[in-house]
Image (cartoon, rainbow, N blue to C red; front, side, top):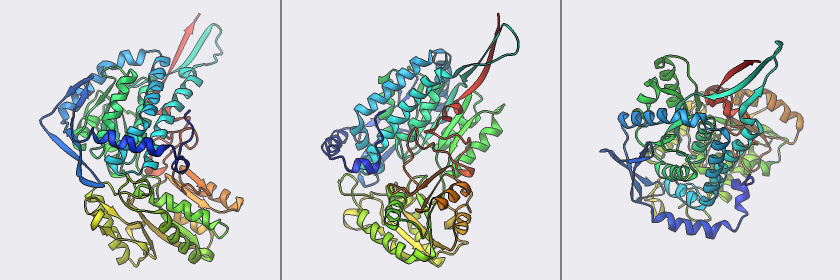
Length: 522
C-alpha cells in the first residue's frame, strides 16, 4: 500500500508543494474545454450542455459538459449489459490486475488530480492530496483482499460421500454508480472498485458539481485496461439518471453517495419499480456528534473538533456538527475552541498554501449558510465565532463563509436534526456522560461520532452505547473524520446507510456479489 497519507500527515511533507504548484499550472491548461461522455468506449456529444465554474472564483470556467438525457443513460446501460458476460467471466486475477494498474496511474498523476479537485470543488492542497491517496489505498486494499480471499471461492463441507460443494461469489450485472462532489475521486473509486472488482459493469454518473475530475479518472481507467462498455461515463442531471436507474429492469444494482432525501427517493423508487429485489448501496450523510468530558485533554479536543467541524467547510458526511461539552469545563473549552479556530482556519483561495478553508460548493450552499445562521440566532443561539458570509474584496468572486460556532440554540430547533453540510457547529452542555450519549443518539442518522476523555471507562461506555457506525476516541486529527481503507470501515447506521457493510472494510465487496452454491458429485 502507498501508506496512510492523511490531512495531518501531509501537512509535514514539504516535498508536496513544488509538485502541487506545478500541477496547478498544468491543470490550468486543461480548463475551459468541452468534455464528452463515454458510452461503450466512444466519445458522445449531446445537444444539451452545461458549464461548471470554480467555486473559489466563478470567472474560472472549469469546462463545458454534456447534459445527458434518459436516452444517453439507456444507451450506456445497454453497453454495460453487453459487456457484462465477458467481464464477469474474466479471471478475477485479471480484474484485480487492471484495478491495481489504475491505482498506480492515480499515484502517478496524484498532483494533477489533486490540483483538479482544488479548481473544481475548492478543496485545499492538503485535503485534496489526502483524498487522492485514499482513492489509491482503497483500490490496493481491495485488490489485496480479493487475493487473500482467493476470489471468494470457498470449499464447503458435505456429509454426503463423493460430494464436493463450493461457495462462489458471483456478480449481479450492470450497476449505476452515482457519486458526490465532496470527495469526487475517493468516494467514486470506493463504489466503482466494489462494482468492477467483483465482476459487474457500470454506468457512472458523477455529480454535476464535479464532472471534470471524474472525466480525468475515467481516462485513467481506460489507460489501465478497463474494456469498452465495462465502465461508461455519463454526465447530466439527476432526474435523467433516476428515471433509468430505478425503472429499467436491466439494472442490477445502484451504488449512491449523497443526501438522505435523494438516497431515500432512489431506494423507494428502485424497490417499487424493479421486478424483484435488487441490491442498493447507499451512504446518505449524517448529523455527527462529538462529546468532550471533564476528563478530556482540552487542547487535543479543541484541535480535533476544529478539524472535524470545519475541514472542507463541513462539507463531509463525517463532519462534526454537534458538540456536547461537560458543564465543569464548558466555558474553558469553548474559549479554547474559539482560539483554536482563529489559529487554524485561514480562509481564502484554496490554491494558496496557508489556506485551510476555501469556498463552499455553490451559491445555494452559501445562501443556506446565511439562512441557517439567522435561524440559529432566532432560536436563541449566540454566535461565539464567525457567522458571516464573505463577499468583499478577495472573496467577491467565490462562495466564501466563516466557520460558525453557535451555542444556546433551542433544543427543539430543526438545526439539531438537519444535516447542514456547512461549517456550522452547534454547542450544548451536559452534566453526565449518560445525558451526553442520549443527546448524541437523538438523531435519525448514525455515521460518525467522537469522544474526548482520558478515562478508559468513559470511552468504553461511549463505544458501547453510541448508535453510530464509525466511532473515535481522542482523535486530534479529526474528532469524527478521517476514515481510511483497511483501518476504519465507513459504515452508516440508521438513516446514514443501507447495508451495514461500509467501504474501507472487509465486508464491503459482499455488497456487489451474490452467493452461488456449486456441488459436484464424483
